[in-house]
Image (cartoon, rainbow, N blue to C red):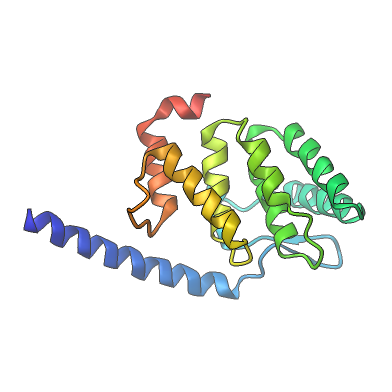
Length: 187
C-alpha cells in the first residue's frame, strides 16, 4: 500500500512540474486576441484542445468573424442570444470555437456574460463536448468565483467526485472519465 502512496506522490509531483512548465510557456502566448487584420491568435491551450493541431486559417477567420459580429451588438441580452444561435449552428468538431468566443468575452472590456449562456446551452449537448469546454473555461483567470464554483460542482456531479476531494487537474479526470465511458462520446 505504501508503494502505491509513494507512486501517487511521485506522479503528482511530476504532473505539477509539467503543469508549471506548460504555464510558463502559455504566459508567453497571446491569448485569444484579434489583431488589426482580423487574424485570431490562439493560445497553446486552445490548440491542444482542438486535437493538438493548429486551427486552420478558415477556422481562425470564422472565430474572428463571430467575434466581430458579437462585438457589434451593444445589448448584452441580444449578444447572448446571438451567441446561442452561433453555438447551435456549430458542428460538433468546431465546438471549441464557442469556447474561444466565451473566453474572448471574458477577457473583453464589456463582457456580456457568455459563460452562463454557454453553460445553459452546452448542458443540452453531449458530455464529450460539454465537459472539455468547461475544463477549458476553468483555466481562465477572469472567470468569476461563483461561475468557477458552479462549474466545478457540475463537473463533480457529472463524474462522481466527492465535494471534499481536492482536484488538482480537471483535464486528466475528464479525459479518464470520457475514455472509461465511451458511450458518452457517441451521445
